[in-house]
Structure formats: C-alpha cells, structure tokens
Image (tube, rainbow, N blue to C red; front, side, top):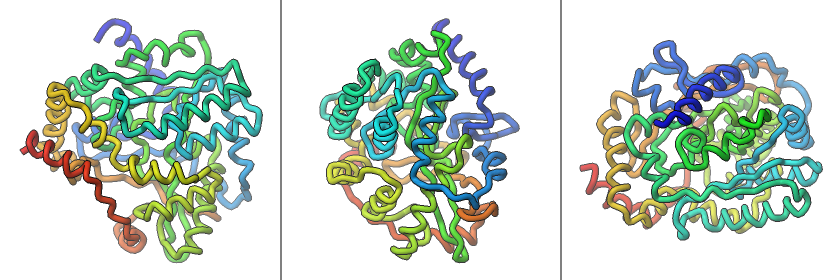
Length: 398
C-alpha cells in the first residue's frame, strides 16, 4: 500500500468513529468491524449493530405521508455542503433524483459505476441512468456527473489477495464485482475523485438508495426490520442511506406502512422471499417508478449480474484470483457460518430488532417468529448463465 493509501486508511478509521451511532457495523471479540466477512474470520460469535438506540427512542405512533422523501432530501442538503448521489438508474435511486427535481434541490455530483466491458449485465440500467442524469443536468447545469468505468485491472486489484478481499466494507456475501465504496475510496484509480470534496474541506456524503426496510406480520401485528445482508457494498464513513436512517426514522416508517397495506391485500406475511411481481407492487406503493423496462432489467439481469460479468471475462489470471478467494471461503464455511449454494456464498443473515409500525414495541427475532412468518414461496428463476458458471466454478473449486 502506498503512502497516500495508508493516510487515507488512517483517516477512514477516524471518520468511522465520528459516525459510529449512525452507521451499521458488526462486533466480534469486543472489536467493531465494517466488513462482516472480516468479523466472521475472527470469530463467528458476532453481533449486528443497527442504530438500535435511536430507533428504540423514536415514536412509531406518529402520522407520516409521502412528503417525507422531500423532507429527507432537504435535511441532507442542509446537513452537508456537498451532496454526491450514487446513481444506478434503478427505481430506488431514481426516486431520490425525481424528488430532487420536484423540490428544486441541487445535487453537486452524480456518480454511476460501470463494470469493465461493453457487454456487461448493467447495460440497460446504465443507459437509463445516463438519460436520467442528463435530464437533471439540464435543470441544474452546475451539477457534475461521472461514470466510473471499472477495468480488468480493477477487478484483479479487488481480488488481489484474501486479506484485501475480506476487508471490503459491508461484505456480507461473496460479491466479485469491484464496486464496494471502500475499494473506490482506498484502492481504486478513482480514489482522488472520491476524496476530492473532503480534501477541499467540504462536508460531503454519498447518498445511496439501498437498505429499504422489510416488513413481517406476527400475531396480526406488523413490524419492520433490516437484515444485515441488505447492506451490500454500500458502506463507508461518507454513506447516507436515504431510506433507512437514524436521522429521520419517519422515512422507513412510511415505506413499511405502505408495504403493510399491500401485504393485507395480497395475504402475505413478510416482504422477503416473494415473487418479482409482488415486489414490484410493494415498490410502486412507496412511490417508485416501476415501468416495464425496469421490470425487464430486474428479472433478466439483476439476479445474475455477477455471473454474466464473469462469464464474459476471458482472463485466466482474474479467474484464478476470484476462485482462490472463493476456495478460501469454502474451506472456512463451517468456521464462518457460511452458506454455499453454487454460485452464491453468503453469510447467515442477522436481524435488527423487529420494530412495530404503529406503537413503540421492539422485539427480538426468534426461531418461532421466523418459522411462522417466513413461509412465502419465492419464484424459482433459473438462468442458463448459472449453468455455465457452475461448470467453471466446479473446475476451479473441486
């Protein structure tokens, strides 16, 4: 690691300490980690820290409506001198951008991440992202937009060794795409640009649209919750979760209540493990734009982006690095409580508290609650790409 990267890493740790009460993390051996994989490699007895103190103090009996998105974005604009929106073109981030246009809120920078080759699985989504970004810039010409085009060398650096691989912040599953925020800030060629607002003395954040709450109904009572697997690669000292935040719990409360209304109509007891069509209805109920192009992209690409990307990368060196890391996880699956279902390697999800939608009750997920509420049947989508990937996987792993 060069001197600049070392200094950034030191600063990174200090910045996390400053935001310890507003970001998720894991604890193992009384030490806080921001990579679940790294925590599990130290000790399987870990806990998930999800801003519980803030949510437990919040009054869930209040009324809230769809103006909450505007209030949240105004809150961020007031809190930070520089707003960066991490924009993928999907329904979650589009709702944020649409809110900015409607409310005449200036976003300083819009960043989209593209994988390295032209036939990547994100192509349609990235094209939509470009269109949406262009529309916004016509309204706000001072907004700057960038596409971070990852290369084969980025992929190789991302998988360079097991220590690097495990350290990527937010890691809850085997994710081979080099898109983690910690990689972009600390190790990639985009590092200078990512740090630029901070180096200029600006108080900045990276707005992300993931980690919306889930809802379950237990004994005729609805609760919202988050599973740590939802964090994905979106974790850094600069990240601001737009929808699930201790700064404005009303946002996730509004979404959860909208979910609940659809759940009653469709007679479902939780919002996980449901069909794509039901998921679209839930998202639409919260104000997201669920059009036909989004549906097509979600069903045909979202579930197997990693697979498609890797299959179109004809580079033996990269494959060797990827599967060296995969083999490490396979060999340590029992020690780290990993679930291996080729081609996926995931950690066992840890639940936040279950938080009532209409009063201030908070309960802990138990085996009994899980058995009673996680009974939805998820549609089985089989992709031919997985079969191809499986053959390559077995050649390297077995």
